[in-house]
Length: 318
Image (cartoon, rainbow, N blue to C red; front, side):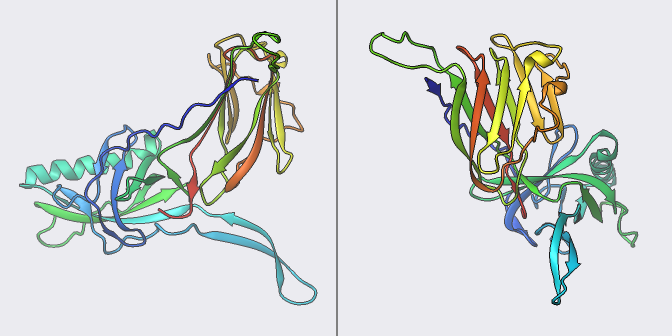
């Protein structure tokens, strides 16, 4: 069966401010991205606002709570571990050439952080000198009050922001992708005997370089009548049968997107196709750290049929 594997493409990482020494992180550059996408440098000491390293906290490993059961022979046995939401303390100095400039900067930064409570999370990005970067979704939780001391609030002031994070894990800013595509079929006898399958796009091994499990997103391009994804190590699998949905089989060029967290199935035109999954046996499985064997199977595949798997590795620390 002809397979086409797309080469990995590494997108450009946006410009970052100069690296500085940040507690729990080390020599790095930090940028805050507000819900509108505007980037605010946090470690450029020549800017009108920058991070005060003294007092930064919450950038290390996630916090966990554990559930255990007493053991009859003494001690206890671990039953469950639950990662907790994260809180970051971020001291910030804001200044201006005069009172008008300072006030404009102070108000602009207040809006950039507090709008996360109305418009969705912002992102705290930590970039290393080697070009790699990780980010964390953050919400404003308080602390933008100023020092309230003599001489502050005129041309400068500082605040110790508290940022709340739903997910304690840092995400890579560059997505990992796997692409499998049905090639053009060949005549069995031309120019010599060949076999081309219209069912299985292929078995492959997917590498998750992160520290913890992550839940991928799948995009399937037709033609296809049914799609099965299997995690070979665990045996977990799910099948999307297009005939069981209001859409019907995927035609050439049509797409369907399967999100595993949160569970969601949408056609390229926005139709909800979640009823096509093989409930209750369907398991929208995660990829654990390391290498995992997986199989993509498309019934009714033809020229142009393709599967794209996308995920952002998750890490304990920045």
